[in-house]
Image 1 (spheres, rainbow, N blue to C red):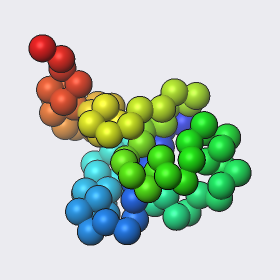
Image 2: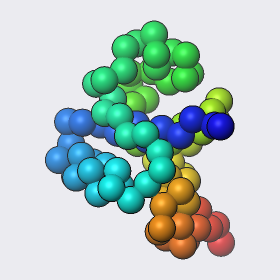
Image 3: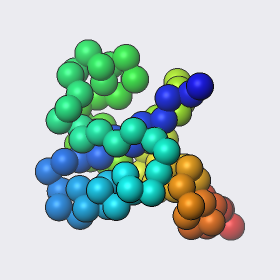
Length: 90
């Protein structure tokens, strides 16, 4: 099974509240960026700056940042329609 992880900046009130909301409605793991060591981030091909500047969704070896990350995360919840709308490109 592919590991699903949402990485968010635990310093931001808005991001934290969104992650808490998502954690009650999702199938993925939710982790604040501060809970990762630099070695763990490097194994995900992410830097400390990456995770401190935007949300990341990790599916196995694939990673998606920002709105793409949020959209992909929402696809795993009962709000998948919202995720599809976020990922839709004109």
